[in-house]
Structures are given as C-alpha cells and as structure tokens.
Image (tube, rainbow, N blue to C red; front, side):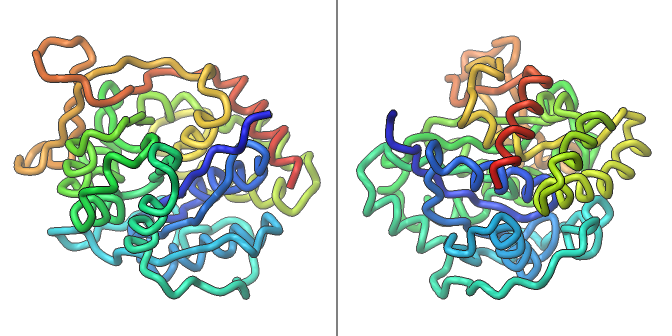
Amino acid sequence: MSAPRKIIIDTDPGQDDAVAILLALACPDELEILGITCVAGNVPLPLTQKNARIVCELAGKPETRVFAGCEAPLMHSLVTAEHVHGKTGLDGPSLPAPVMPLESQHAVDFIIDTLRAEPPASVTLCPLGPLTNIAMAFEKAPDIVGRVQEIVLMGGAYFEVGNITPAAEFNIYVDPEAAKIVFDAGAPLVVMPLDVTHKALVTKPRNDAFRALKTPVGVAVAQMTDFFERFDREKYGSEGAPLHDPCVTAYLLRPELFTGRHINVEIETASELTRGMTVADWWRVTTRKPNALFIGSLDADGFFALLTERLARL
C-alpha cells in the first residue's frame, strides 16, 4: 500500500466544507492532513477557524493542527454568505464549542514552511474557499510554487455561471485577485466548478443514508445538509443541496469518479459586470495555454456511496 497523500486543506467552513474535512479525516490511510488553514469567506475568520476545530472534534481528531490565516481579501472588503450557511456558518446541528487549541502560527507562514520542509511535489493544496491564503503564500515565497504537487480546489463555474453574481461563483468572487495569482502561478491545477458540484445533490435518500449511520458524524452531516438544502431548493428548484467542497476530497480518493478537460482558465478581475468570473476555454477556441483540469461531471451515485462508507468510519 502506498504512503498516504500529504495535503493541506485551506477552508472557510461552511457546512459543505465541514463534510469535505470529515471525509478527509475519515481516510488516514490515504490522506495525511498536515494542517487545516482557515480563511475568511462563508463567514468571517473568527468563525471559520472555530468551525474547523469544531469539525475536527466532531470527528474525534483533536490532534489535527488548525491555523488562522487572512481575515480579508487582498484588495477588496470581505463578502460573506450567512444567507446560505447561517450566522455561525455551521447552522443545523448543535455542536459544542471547541476545546482544542488554535495554532499560533499564521496560516500563510505554515503553508510556506511546510512546502519548503517537505520533499518537492509531495504536498497537495486543497482550497475550499477564497484563495487569499494560497495567493499570499505564493506572493510572499515564490519558491514554493514549484514545490506544490497539485492544487485541487473548489471554485468557479462555466456552464452554471454564477451563484453570487450573474457571472461569478462565490469563492472566486470574494477574492478574484487572489484567484488570478493562483491560476496564473503555473502549479498543476484541478478545478471543481459549480458545473460538477451542482451534480452532487443531497437528495432525501442520500441524506437518510447519512442519518442511518446513527453516529454523531452521520447525524450532524444530515442536519447540516438539511439546513443549507432549504436555500438551494428555493433558489434552483433542485431536489437537494449540492455538496460543493467534498468533491475536492472525493477527487483525491477516487479521481475516476470525475471527468473534465485540460483547458485554459482565466480570472476576470476588472469588469464591473463579470468580476470574479472564471473564463474557461471549454471549447478550446483560443490559443491560450491550458492551465487547469476543469471538471465537468461526476458519478453522483459513486460519490455518495464513497462519502457514506467513509463517514461511517468516524
């Protein structure tokens, strides 16, 4: 059996972030979480770093190292998403406040130090929120870009267009300048846009399967998805809530569940109309060099089977 893949999860929990983290924590044989770095996004930083620790304790993994990072985007004021995730970011279940400590080091410095200390191309970055921490690390220490094994991120959209503005997906919109730095950096990139995450719908039978685990994790996940499902049903008329961020963890575990294209993706930072848009050359109509594997679809039944089976281990 090969050694587990070393990852850093960069996140702004969020119920779907929480499920992505739980899935990673459930798979220590395959994924070694070097640290969880938190960023402002779905809710402000004091809540995202608290929520990350709540999730680690829910999973029974209080030894996981959690770091607080950037509390605002590089150039603009913070836009948050309490309207989706509730005032805590983890509305739904009633979970106790964490007792495990927050690490004292800044998340950006942890990312830099870790990439410099680990062998080249041995650490995968897994951003589930705005890309502020990753961009700051790349700007502060350009030498680390070439040491990244891969960046597998949730963000952007092409056919599904925008969920926070008509043209932009939330994670990219919150800090487009950071996204541009990351997309232009040259590190291997895998993108989970709304195009794929909107196919990972928690239908009632899938949610019942979480609840039927009868574990604290299973019940909490069911309660979380119940909570943010109300928003998506109302907005999209869909049969359930899309589990955006767990697509990142699932891709690390079972890449064969996903299909996409290696294409050029540029980030719009200037336009009033389309700021934060991921301009994906899906039909390869430009001569711009491909810089990302842009995922378009997934085997949803396989995804939920994996999720339920692994969450049962916690």
